[in-house]
Image (cartoon, rainbow, N blue to C red; front, top):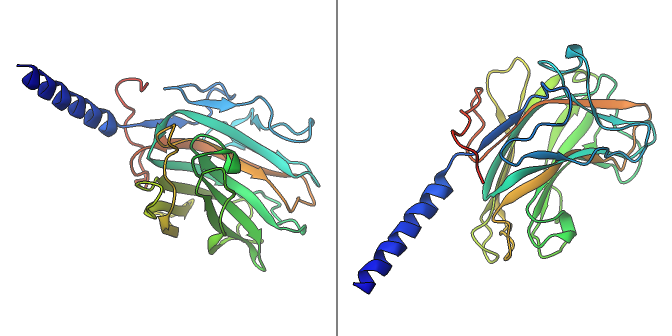
Amino acid sequence: MRMRFQLITLLTGVMLSATAAAQPFYIKDDFSAGDLSFNKNGFAWEGTRTANDPSSPTHIAPSVRNGKSGHGLHIFYRAGSNWSEKRFDIGSAHRELWIRYWIKVPDNFQHGSGSPHNNKFFAIWMDDYSSKGEGPTVFWNYWRSSEGANLTVSNSIGQRKVSGPNVERVPFIRVPQDRGRWMQMVFRVKASTNRSSNDGIIETYRRWEGENSFTKIQEVRDANMAVPPTGPNGWRRGYVMGYANASYARDTTWIIDEIEFSNSSLLDNNSPPMPPHPLH
């Protein structure tokens, strides 16, 4: 009788685990509140000001004309200043995570002339950032090029180590052709099976406004990116934009709108339905 009870308990636990693992996750902030107060299923924008110049805070545009479909998140770099970013915590960890958002190339975009010339574009991590984490971090950087800027991706393996080499260098922004254009980015990250396996996945997709489908522009399928032994069990935190090693010669503003997070593909032009119940 005891063995039967143990078997039922084990099967019930397996079924519950499978159900939890399959539970859909999706959140979206379109900044319709006009501020950074969005909080759903544990998601929150972190910090009140993340710029190294007190006079240039990250803020929400107060006017519909300054976003793509309403308000938008403005990431402002003062001329000669290096740092402006906004961090987030999605509230739960996922071994596979998709991120999608619209971003407008600054009207006056011109990559800075400083060295090194890699500027942060997006980053996602598990327990802590870069060499502070037992889990991995993935970074996207844009670099100066003869046409404007190239995009690369790199990752740390965790274990409190810095990131590896920048790979998948692709043309990203042309100057002056792409100034003022909106593009929709999709990032996919998937943890590797364990610390001894190189089967983690990093993918990047982009479509310009007016295009009907996404183009895959980067793909890594041999990354070592295992979850940290003490958790969390997947990707949870990150930032948009970030430190610009090559500072801008003029005040420069990136605008972000309709940012989405999901544990399933976001390559469809439509948004998936919201989960019926809050996730814990």
